[in-house]
Length: 167
Length: 167
DNA sequence: AATAACTTTCAATTTATTTTGAAAGTTTAA
DNA sequence: TTAAACTTTCAAAATAAATTGAAAGTTATT
Image 1 (cartoon, chains in turn orange, cyan, red, yellow):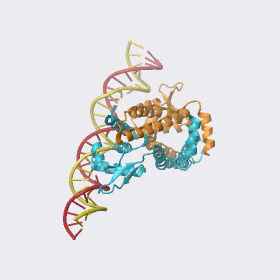
Image 2 (cartoon, protein in one colour):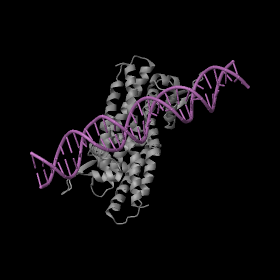
Image 3 (cartoon, protein in one colour):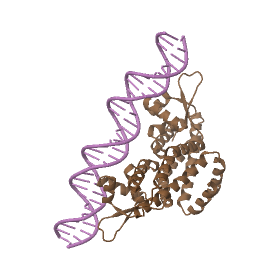
Image 4 (cartoon, chains in turn brown, blue, orange, yellow):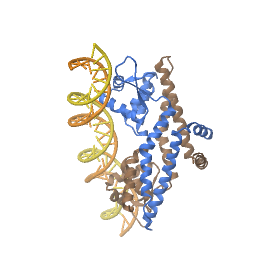
């Protein structure tokens, strides 16, 4: 296998895998392309390489910037904008963990807290509902705490600790 | 808020959240319903409560059984099949982690290993590609190892250790 | 062995998501 | 200030995914 083929494989694998962290195909592919590109790319470059429309490229680049994993860079002497991605996988995971917590986990925790607080009328239905939604709330809360530790400064010690424990 | 309202809220929240672990709305809603139900439900019950068709119920129940988080139970004296879900959130997370590793992480790791092994022709393109895909491979591998520890027997000590570290 | 009770399958339909492309908007350079 | 270079927006079109419902399949009962 040579570079071109490997690159295509990476981009398409990443594309279909986008669902793993809740983004669409084009978005994941743009990210993949930038992730392995040694220098920033213009929108033109991206459109061409991935064979997607201008509108598609524009919207998904914006989406990636909202996730905080793709950035605009200014290339001196160039009129148009260039884009590059977060290159450090540790920082990338942190950013994704942070965003998923904010977008998905935290709203869910809020709902779970609210609904598990209904009054127990003594019925089997209510008892089971309260018990199960409370258990789910605790789980989500623990998961969120773990994610936050990863996201914040403690990254170093926790990673090291985990690696020690797990290796 | 009373039980009925809370239950509806739980089911719909879980439904829209299904994407978090890669399943569709109906599937997540069936799971939610069974998760808070004190006793097993028939396909009829599920169809009625969620207002979905027989075919939909049938296919998604099968999907949930493939995930290993919903089971058929035999209710004595009843002709039809009844269903129940994994009730323990710890076991539920384990099962989901196990399946996601098998379905998504492992195939990805395989591709990453393969493509990061291309020959370095000395170009900046190739150098960056190899460096970045290798970093991604290492990350995915560490994540997979962590998931496996969770899935297997070590569950207890690692959970306890984490809780101690994180609380 | 026939029938009733129940479940699965799958082509057709509906619904949801993604993509396009061209008009509108913005920025830079002359 | 004008015009060219470039980017964003968004309604319409294309594509993909989920859902239905009825026929086919299966299993249990008499």
